[in-house]
Length: 236
Image 1 (cartoon, helix red, strand yellow):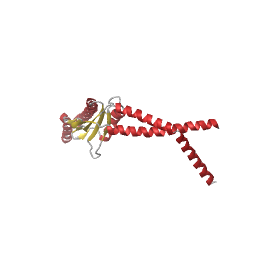
Image 2 (tube, one colour; image 1 turned 135 degrees about the horizontal axis):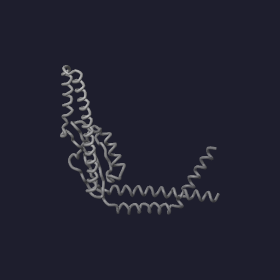
Image 3 (cartoon, one colour; image 1 turned 60 degrees about the vertical axis):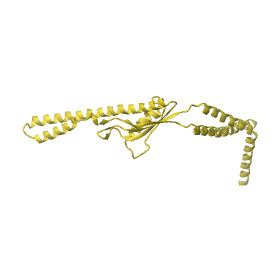
Image 4 (cartoon, helix red, strand yellow; image 1 turned 180 degrees about the vertical axis):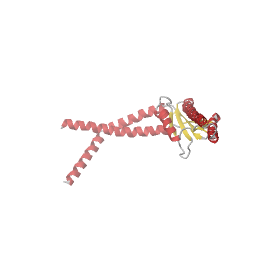
């Protein structure tokens, strides 16, 4: 039984090879056509410019306004996955996992200006976000100050002569909360200069042509096998 199965498999493989050999011209035509069309498309494709920028996140009194992993998720969702705002942003990532306040943005566009403008849009969004976070901190501080004022008045009304130390402690806490230095707010910024280079496209073009050749070859084989299967069914 096993010998018969092996012989059947050998016959099937032989028939398969014969079918493909008979249709070798068609395989060559399909493969070459797809490769040539890809080559024409790639050769007419304009060169692109790549811009890279190192970004430092915003902070207030040397404390991060937003944790880096959370910020990167937000920025990728808004500017990489959703292309409606910045269609030329390719990636936003943290190259050095030890760095907690730095990350990179890469943009690729048909002009240097477009690539740089997209990066600046991301930074502008971050700066607005930093200001909003700072305003939230101020709002929370003002609420704490109001609570402290209430406690001081409560102590004064209940014990007008005593607990001066407690009132003094509350006043000190109030003064520390009121001492909000806006100059301590550092919004996100680009570190150094945006690096722009004419991205080499030659290696990409060759890669695309090779991939097109492989796809064309296997696609032609697949089509021939499908056509042969339908023919066999009709004969049977």
